[in-house]
Amino acid sequence: MIKFNAITRLTLLSSVVVLIFFGFGSYVIYSIYQIEKHHQLNYEIDKVLNHANQCQLSQKEFLLGAYTDENFVMKGSNASYEEFNTSINQIIKQTNAFSENPIVKNLDRKILFSNLKQDLESYQKLFVQTAALMKEKGFKDLGLEGKMREAIHYIENSELLPSKVNLLTLRRHEKDFLLRKDPQYIEKFRSDFNKFAVQIENIEANEEEKLALSQALTTYQANFEKITEIEKQIGFSEKEGLRSKMAFRYSSIDAQLNDLIQQINLTTRRKTREIIFTIISLFVVVMLAFVAALRFLLLAIAKPIAELRDAANKISYGDLSVNVEHIKASKLLVRLIESVQRIVFKLQEVMRLIEQISTRKVTQEQTMSGENDDISKTLNKIIFELQVIDKEEEKRRWYNESVAKFGDVLRLNQLKTQDVYDNIIKNYVKILDATQGALFVLEEAEESFLTMKACYAYERKKFINKKIYAGEGLAGTAWLEKDTILLTDIPDDYVEITSGLGNANPTCLLIVPLKINEQVVGVVEIASFSTFEEHEIKLVETLAENVASFIQNNKVNEKTRRLLETSEMLTQQMCEQEEELRQNMEEMQATQEEMRRNETEMEQQIHKLKNENNLLKSLSVN
Image 1 (cartoon, rainbow, N blue to C red):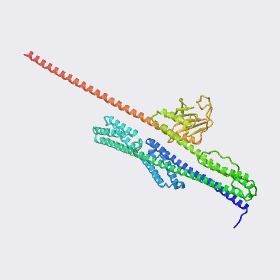
Image 2: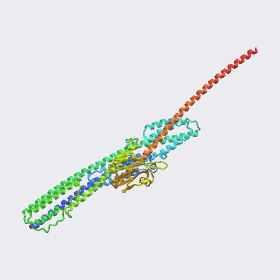
Image 3: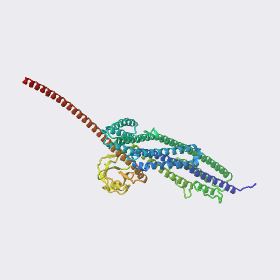
Image 4: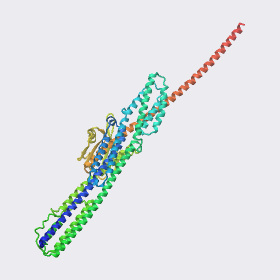
């Protein structure tokens, strides 16, 4: 049997201890890496959820604006349409990547990914089908609506119609349906259409002209019925047609993604518990190894202790590159115990930090005990990377919440337009933590100009009347160039509003044009005491598109409302004129009857006079 002397045995024991420490440290680093992979997967799924939310937002924007978007009807695509397809393709791409992720594979969720893929493809097909129907329907002079308008304009321009009251009533039902998507107007249209068709049949004109009018009326009715069928397929409300199917698919996608997140979170927590349990077990093993080593040292006092103390000190400060082959003998047992205790404390601190870092309870950089403190270096690197991820996540959360909040503001249709403008600039200022903000809206005239619709400064609404022409000032320049302007050196006399605390001038000014389809409909101007960051500028530009869409839709709705009022007023005037004409005809008939009665009486008197005259003549002859 081979016998080892004390120095050899101490060397072997020290080597075993070093290997245990090295294995423990390696496992700690590996464990942190595993936890970070789980958190990274959660982050990627959050991105997919953001894309899903963007899909829903783009879908709603598309359904809201495509009805009146001539560019979409002509080309079959617009910004919302492209944004939806981009987002849905990103979701499909990322979910395919998830299915190959080792963590997700261990969850055995093949059926979930299969269903999710089918739902995504179905959701995209339903959206494309809806877009195709809306393009087929058309707008103004395009599509089915264009054919319908062409046919009815032919009838309107005909001089054969004795009265256009029924025609105008028919047009009103048509426009009411196109605006409100209410099925009751379909029945009203059909009822009044039959009356108008009878009126056409009773027109006194040659057969060729009557046939042309009848064909135009038939074309008008056929295209209207096609449009109503398209609207029925799309859905008169969120609970009908393709809109209902898209909502169902989106709900299914959202539920499956949330289920996947739950499963991954459960796996992450289970993995964390396993790691902590393993670390504790390893720690117990290390402690047992120390006890065994201590017992060995107590049994062999002559063993090399002094230099082992120095090696233990290096390990306690995080230096794992310790060479114990040249250790010499010493009897400093007290210091050896102190060194071992420092090692224990260091291991306990590492274990505590691992748990706190994984739960974000520790975010500050750890103080290093020296240049060779490898454990502290690794922990600080992980803390830094987690902080970067958390900051980016906070920016994304802030961005999404701000977009959702603005969407709620723009969807408050029961408010007056001015109230919406006030809420828009108020939310701009509050979200960006700015000092002042102004909203300018383009007024179309012979020489178009921007007029200030809302102003908010120092947490109060301001009332300022201001007009800006193209190229005039910074706002006019942004309008003319259709591009964002960011200034960090603002002239002292530029800002007209001051607070009650003094005349401090903002240090940063952001001016963003409100564009829709490269057409500027307004400008938003925001001033702040702090410099706007890139993600804040991106948010303002993104929201500017939504605000521009709201302004454009509001103008279209206002113009439509005025046209409807004018149409109703003309209809009322025609009815009044018709009633007045009828009364005049009745008066003329009464006058003619009176004249005929007087004429009859005169003839009777003349006849009587003639008889009397003849009688007198006969008497005079006799």
